[in-house]
Image (cartoon, rainbow, N blue to C red; front, side, top):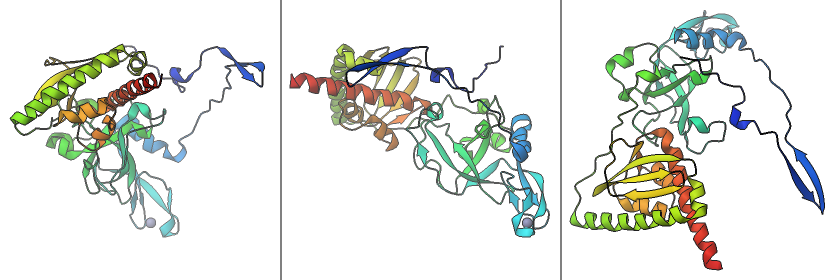
Amino acid sequence: MAEKKQKVIPDEYIPEVASRVVTIEGSDYLVENDAMYTFYERSMGEFSPFFLAIRDEKKILGCKCTKCGIVRVPPMLTHCPDCDFAPTQPVEVGQVGRMNTTPPITYFATSLFLHIAPYGRGRVILEGADTAMSVNLYTTTGILVPGLIKKGTEVKVIFKGERVGEITDIFCVPTSELTPDQITKKGLEESELNWATPKEPVFPKASEEDIAIYKQSLKEMQALAAEMSKSKRARKAIEGWKRDIAVKTKAGEFAMCINDGDFSIEERRLGSPDFVMACEDPKTLLDGLSYKGAITDSVIMKKLWISKNMEFNTIFKLDRLARFLAREKKEAAKQ
Ligand SMILES: [Zn+2]
């Protein structure tokens, strides 16, 4: 298989050869896209063994003071400031540890980090270490929500398949999501985890009233979907996007399909959806699509669960879809 080559500046950030005219105080000025080349090489210096161990050996290194024995991870010091600058020695530490803080979660990342969001960021004290190391945190159970990883949660270091010698070559997941073998295995890789079958929430049995609410909500959502598909502006929100989503609620399951501007809600079960959305009360979703409260908020507030973390991006698009339709209607009402 051909190796995928990554560019230092991703292609999507490189502007086209183009120009535009800017009018300032009645005069036209031509503005052209141009470039300044500023690539440079960065030495990892004394951190090189740490990053090489991650890349080539799937090991985490720390440094141990030859006098007091304190183990610092990452190995940020060659000499211990507490012991009259006694030299330190590299040591390997464990790949399981405990969070020493509750990690905040980034849902709305800047363009630089969008491709890895939502992610948690916190500090873990690995077995054999005396200091905490910063790591990105994920879950295999679907969307990363507050409370899933807290101060004291036991987590394990996971290595990416393709490693370049950067701290993002590793991340952590809670050990409660792993098998005993996976917990003890050194150098556990991302591809060895079960990302495909996260545990869906279980809802109580639906009452007659729940079924009535479900039917009514579904009808209203279908009407909204039809409006969205007809709205030029709303279509923009899901342009180029394609997702078949299975939506499970207490009283029934339906399909939500996004297809390059077309948006539909159908009462049928999808055989192989791109991801699953589960919300006990279908009104949560109806409110979101009607632009009464954001769907992204419902996810963060744990009212709506999604089976794939990265699909938060799709939820974000659904919010835009609702907002664009609401705006179009508001402007039409003004005229
Ligand atoms: Zn020392």
